[in-house]
Length: 171
Image 1 (tube, rainbow, N blue to C red):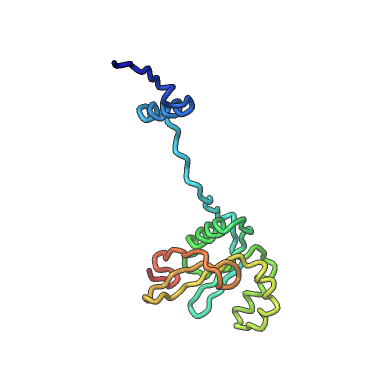
Image 2 (cartoon, rainbow, N blue to C red):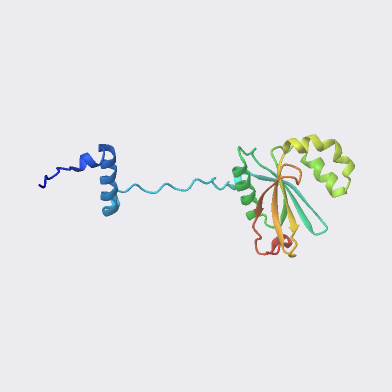
C-alpha cells in the first residue's frame, strides 16, 4: 500500500537556508537584484603631493635621488609609494626618508666619496631611511630595480618595473 508523504520545502530546508537559496536563484535571473561585487582591496596610488625630492646627484652615470616621504603605516603602503616615485623617476636610485634633517650632509658626503663623514650619521640613517632601491645585475645579465626596506640591503620587499630601459635596466 502506497502512502503519500507530504514534504514541503520548509521541511527539507530550514527557513534561513531556504530564504538564502531563493534569493540566490532570483538574483541569477534578475541581475539588478544581485549585489555588486566588492572592489579589490589595494593601497591607493600616492599623489605627487605625498613626496618631495630633497636632492640628487650623479656619480659614474648613476643618478641618486633623495625623497621625503610620509612614514608609511605598512609595507604595502611603502611599496605603493615607492612604485609611484619610480614611475615618475624611472632612472634614479631612490633613497626614501621620513625626515629631511640630515639629507644635505648625506648628499655632500656621498658626492665627495667621503664615507668617514657618513659614519656618525648611521643612527639617523637607520631611523629615518624607510626604503632604498638599487639596480641589480641578474645571473642572466638582465638588470632589475629592487626595493629594500630601510637603509640597508638586507630585506628585499619588491621588484620595481623596468620602464623603457631607463636607468640602465634591461628586462
